[in-house]
Image (cartoon, rainbow, N blue to C red; front, side, top):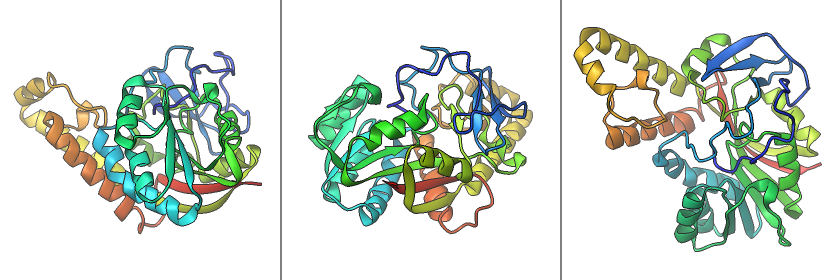
Length: 312
């Protein structure tokens, strides 16, 4: 989630939908003292709005394997649908996607505010990595592709962020990105998304509200690919049930496991796991379910969307 804007700019007391400006009393998610409220437009917005400094921009929600495993698939898909020579990734992290984009023929640069990850990306790609937030980034160069992944849930003002990224495009340039589709799904799916990761996540979209947001930013979708996440959610729910059963049968084991530090990808209630090997195995399985199985499943649950968008 690195690459979010440092300051809010919308006022810390505002509690409304970023897409339509509406408010809602329909709470569908709760996590870490925050609520996810389902707006009529399809967006789930966070309430209350996180205060300045409350969001930890260095916190990563997945093991590194999550980003490494999917990077080549995303780079190849974008290369098929977004021609050109130059690519900038906003929130490039440790450079997993940039490296794969480089291998498809792009000349790459990155924007990453976390110094440690920026340093790794710089070494990995031997390319310019600008250590700053998007709102602070400016350059004379224009890029054929500006990419970002799972960032629209994190930007304090995603419409402004899309506008800023569009300003970095060449005349025929496109935005290429991934965004989750969580809003507007049947309520029972939300049980498998808890904890959702508040306050790092701010906005969760439906496909309709996402299209409205893009239109407001002067963008339209040229190409997209949807991946259904119902198998991933089912896996999470299954692991939780197994964990509860194990804890009931082996309470002493549950106490010992509670003292083991676990990666943020899997809630403690969803374990059994040993630190690194099982975390990687879990990410491999999640990646397979998300991008291989999810590519052929019907749209029955939450999803994730790869998009190439152009200016209207």
